[in-house]
Length: 352
Image 1 (cartoon, rainbow, N blue to C red):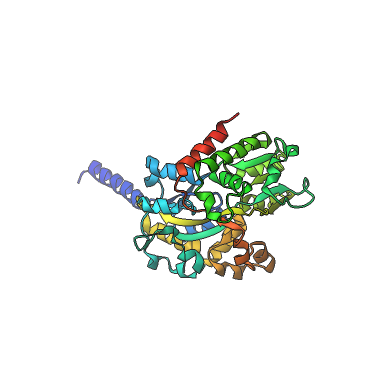
Image 2: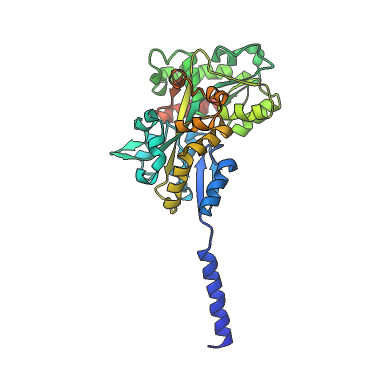
């Protein structure tokens, strides 16, 4: 063998060896807070991999990306209860082998038994966490918690309110108009006249809206900069602002509020399904779930997380009265006329 040929083979071997040692990666498309280094880093170290996360601002953004050809870009997604069923039915995610997720049986029975991610006798997602879309307010501007969503329409808060760029704002206006009575599920199947009334109600709100937020960080900044005094938000922002010593309050008004159950799913096109299964198992374990609540303020799907919490932490997460707390939350459901709802919402946003 000539020296030149030997060097050529050696170089080829080094290149192939480098490829073989390439670090495995896992790509996520999830809600903010679901890939925080405080708990993801331990997974990366355990499995000698890298986790890359992209964050979504709404359920519709997630669906648009998956249907727009990006499904193969991601391995794990975290759809909420309003779109989880349609994503499973569309074949965009893989049915799960629950034997590869031993901690699945530790999850809250009520969440596991919901039909949201079940299709043709198979399960397509694991419940991960849940929570409300509460009314957030600057406590320095309110002597007591606002009692109604109607506070958003108060003329004295002109230019000081923020709402979410999501159909949850449509649902909230429907609640203010009483369309959730006597059946809360009715807000997910409104008639054309009802949607027109919701549109009119939201158009009345526009002068009070400083900004329609689309990411959690955006709303946190709006409060920090004293641009808004009240908003529809997530417990994540409450958690962030409290850590910044901002005087933030959180409440569920008299009309109640909508909420969500987020699931972790593995995309059908994922090329890293084995690693994705390990990630799902890790994320629903009790200790990881505790770390998740530390970051987000959301309620864990694994009740075993409570054993790592103080009494105050359990009380703040309503784990001492879960059933009573859930009575005030209308969990998102599939919206049969979602396109029409989005049409109404887009018309509201476009109006001057």
